[in-house]
Image 1: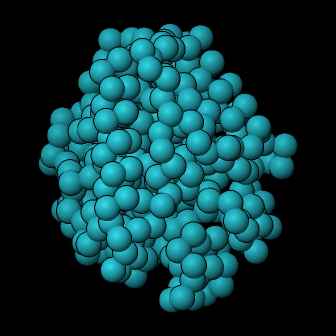
Image 2: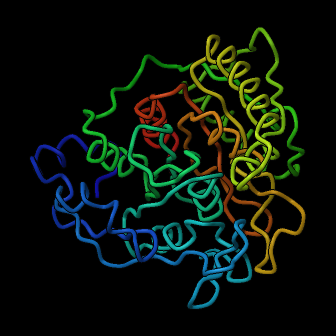
Length: 328
């Protein structure tokens, strides 16, 4: 698939089949059910990627029916989950893109920890079988240009148009509650500074500093049958109000994609790898993880970009411009 600068000619040449002959991987053995638009656009499904096996804790570290899925940068580290196999397939060069689903960060965390692009769509924009409405389709791709072609195919929208640059953005290392480790914060912040220096974004201060209520209890309550949802709805509404106020002042919110470096296959302990991502499954905002460099352990980290509802095209246009000006 093409990289930045080649997408226009690629799409023109492919015409009605923009993915003609392109190998794709689908998440899990039921992944073909959601891949119809990709196959209709000429994509060729070459395999199903690994997902957590039955009984695996929801905060998976890539343990499936055929054993553990390893991070392509360090075999003793997790690739994240639950779209672990999709992220690894892209990072290892097996396919240029793979489908995923994201209920708490399941596209964005593997994208960050494997060094690829991962897009979570706006809640309700694409079909989802999740009864809670928290899990939505997404994609893992080797570049923002590839992710943009996926978005055109599944959404029917035209190619994302580059907005006037620089785009205004607010930086938050912790969303007011998360307590991330210093290294992923430093890597993400350095990526932000590169975007600023390249003229892609301009940092602004919101009128009210962003301090979200920890979304964890609300997310977990919505997933638990028979749970008392009054508190969850209250927290969700309050965070929605605060995010609406933020996006009145800016076009993007920038955070680290994950609060830690990739952990070992024994699991994360009592740390929630989702602490910086699952707020936006509750709020429904689209979000994208962009590669942000490497930690001292040799594993990648990600910069998390969040946009107003329905603004996937903004995320993809900014990410493509970042790749063009800075490199992937």
